[in-house]
Image 1 (cartoon, rainbow, N blue to C red):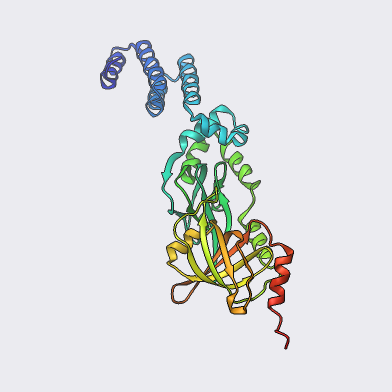
Image 2 (cartoon, helix red, strand yellow; image 1 turned 90 degrees about the vertical axis):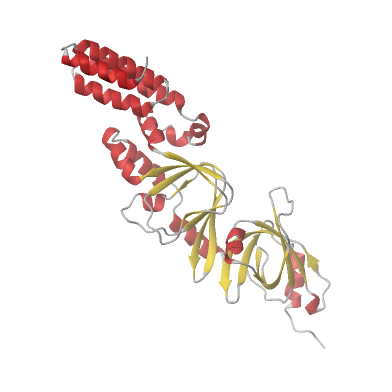
Length: 339
């Protein structure tokens, strides 16, 4: 249909010559063409122009609006819809289109902060691909609260409030693809689709809250008896297929229970933060106690506590609890030697 600027000049000429019907017809054709080319911003702008030219051209206004919404629905990423099917099932098509095209798709590399505890954040993040870690800092300790993946929402604890401070920090643990909704933009969308914001808020309210996560973690950490024993610890990060990742590190055991252990070692702040949520294979030996007991539990890092002189205390939760017989031997080693 040629260059848009030429058509705009033609529309202006039609209007000067009092040929409103011709201007409406040309605008309708341009709107449909733009929509079918997925140029929805241009299609919407042309439809606004159609309203200005003739607000009584109801047939054309309704028809072009329906075509824009239909083409928008066709162009939505089907993988995104599948991941968020439960949420989108609660929306009508116009709300689905408004939300999807009102968000920005972002790809973020691994080991990047999404937001920090104490930040003011007015964005909602819909995770499509990748893995993130949510953690909470308290008295120099970083406590892993949750592993985040496809189908998870992040930022809901601040999004529904004005100038709310982030209770937690979130860091990417792998390359991540997500969609970002700005609160200011949602307010603009809500003027066009008033039902959207209440549905987003209702969905977020049903999610497990940060307060619930914090409460659960604080209780969990005191469930099991911990034994203080001197032992050498060698830890090796492993992937989901139990293959080694990076180089092994050496540390000293601080305490151990049937469900986890804590050890101290030297590293950098960045490396320590990256350990959160990682699986570790741990080799323990108790030569100092003149014991030949050795075992290799696998656990997940659930907290990292910074200490002076670049030392960090790492808390792991075992994938599988220790064999009771092994823990009995550990308890025996805490008893004074008999003469």
